[in-house]
Amino acid sequence: MHINKLKLQNFRNYEQEEIPFFDGQNLFISQNGQGKTNLLEALFFVMTFKSIHRVQHPAMIGWGKDSACLELEFTQNFSAKEEENKSESTNHSLRAILTPNGKTLWVNEKKIQKTSQLLDYFFPLFYSSDYVFQFKTQHEERRRLIDRCLGSLQKGYYTTLKEHNQILNQKNFLLKQGAQAKEILSWNQLLASRIRELTLTRKKYISLTNENLAKAYRKYSGTENHLSFFYTSKFSTPSKKKNLLQPENAQPEKVFEKNETEEVENFSENPSGVWTVDEIFSFLEGKIEQEKRVKYSLYGSHLDRYRMNQQQVDLEVHGQDYFSEGQFCLAYYCLLLQIQEIYHHQTRKRAIFLIDDLFQGVDQDKKQRLVTDFSTLAQQGFLTSHESREYLRSVHPEIQKKTKIFFIHSGRINTLDSF
Image (cartoon, rainbow, N blue to C red; front, top):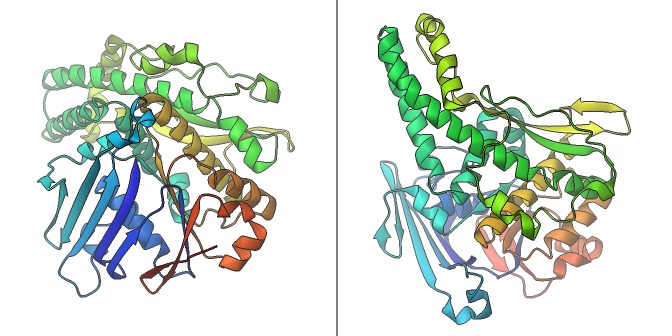
């Protein structure tokens, strides 16, 4: 997927802008408060029809304006065969209109009804210090990211999640009405099957993210600390603890090997420890009286948890959730890299990175590693920085490779002819 051009009208502090993008990395330089983050928010919104900051759409309309319009021109992803013949690529257009009363979206001049249709075109991954803080402190944000990842890989995932939530809502309605236990049993049976399906899928996916997560974290942090991303469900028995502080050569060189393809793509495979439908139903049945007393459901996949964990070799402390601000930012960035690897392996497409001030709060040697790798990413990316062009040129010469530079001032964007 290549984003060719973005047009903004009355979006945040952008009154009228048209930005042609580069196929590689696009770097936007400005001081704080000039519109860097707003630009990335616009890209994320038009690719997902949702705000990364979870604000209501009227808040994104420019001050004193009646509506906002975002238009995107993009080229469809090539398949493996099409990579050899890029003349087969197809150009598309997308237009989003925001008013105080609603929002509408068209793809190729056809109005779309379900935002999940956008997953056929885009998979953006967003990074900012503010969002990383939300991800660190809010279980809901971690669930939201993983749900979006799984929705991009499995067309039926959002259907199952929607059914789970609808069943849960109906069960909650009955509990509030003081329904008898026998009325709730049938909904528990339906809920149990969805819980099992979601738990299987989520557990398998988190296992994949951990394949190479620790190795990436060691590379960027410059330590031997081991990073893991944990998934916890009431309906899944935790895996046996492993010695995570194994030698570097014990880690796989790649996230996937060719002979692992069938295992990776078969999400219906039953990872050990996930309860059966009958076990889940029996458990829910035993909790009906408790739920009737509180008048709402106490159990379900909406309560699943995800968390980051690092084992600190230098402190000889194991299984700690504590991270410094810089450590967690690096950990989240490494997680995005693994999410991209899984997405590319499954779909043969590339995620689009939206990185807001990646270098903020990171010391110099770690910056150098991040810049070197980001500037050579195969997929298209969008990066902002408050550092001056002269500083970036002198300290990060690698960023000049495959990079187009823009300068933002008060909602106006200019292209720089050279770095």
